[in-house]
Amino acid sequence: MEKGLFNITEAGTTTLIPIYGESGNVRSISLANTSSLEIIVDLFLQDSIGRNTYIIKTAIPSNVTLVLDDDMSFDNSVLGLILTTTAGSLSASTPLSIIIK
Image 1: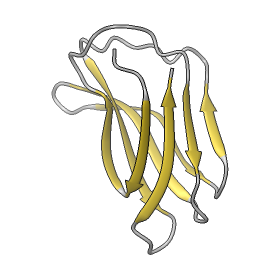
Image 2: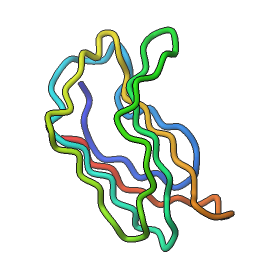
Image 3: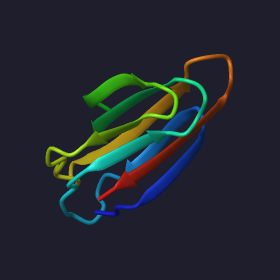
Image 4: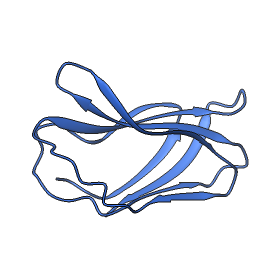
């Protein structure tokens, strides 16, 4: 499973770990809102026919980091990890730094 660093600069949907990728364990996911605005995030697992199972649906306040560290492992031979972001205001910019370990 590919792990790494992501910098999300625009509202939208990002595939963090694609379905059918290499297998492995995700120990933690860090989502850091470096913006001066609140960012709304939906983090979910998606199967091959588009069904979603949500991990979190929340707003991350400005300059706050959300850490998910309760063994985030999943079978990515059948699931992908997807993130959707929207800005809490009219701004289209959503600076969000993500670290997956």
